[in-house]
Amino acid sequence: MTTLMQHNQAGVTVGRDGFDDFVAARSTSLLRTAYLLTHDRGLAEDLLQTALAKAWFAWERIDGQPEAYVRRILVNTYSTWWRRKWNGEEPTEDLPESGSAIGRLGESHRADDRADLWQALGRLPKRQRAVVVLRFYEDLSEAETAEILGCSVGTVKSQASKALAKLRLDPRLIVSQTPAVAPKEATR
Image (cartoon, rainbow, N blue to C red):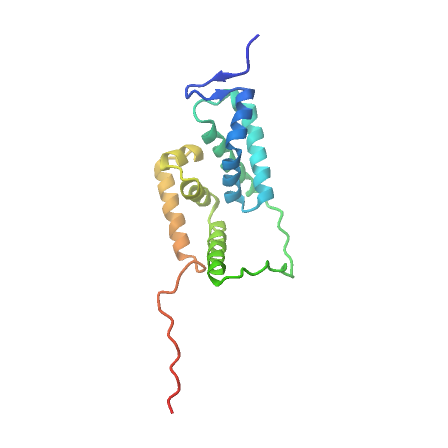
């Protein structure tokens, strides 16, 4: 009787047992990537679950880096989800109540900056967002990002350049270059 557990060229345990070990070790990092792509905890969990289910069926055929393979499934699945016409959002006339204000002014500005960056990232095209997430949030090299996305290193560089250019021009992220001038007091 043959065992389901084997080792690939990189020495990583593969097979059903290896898959369980991989999920236990890497699911937090993969969930973070999914969250950065979707901007929604529930969708991120669904995306990761879908990607891991797809990876499970191909697990014994994975040669090399299983994490890169699963990240590629994450990005590809995310891309196909957003090609659908309906993505779960429903327009409404009334806005929901805003969250509680942060007490200290400094924290409030930092939270606003993060929210503005988060929204600007969400306005990027899928491919550019995936490159930014993998390169700058996940700190992968250009070559690793290219491998995950199934494209050339040059494509990663150009997509990153375009994404950063769009972020630099995003009106919510532009900081005024002119200093604020206090109004002159009226002379008597």
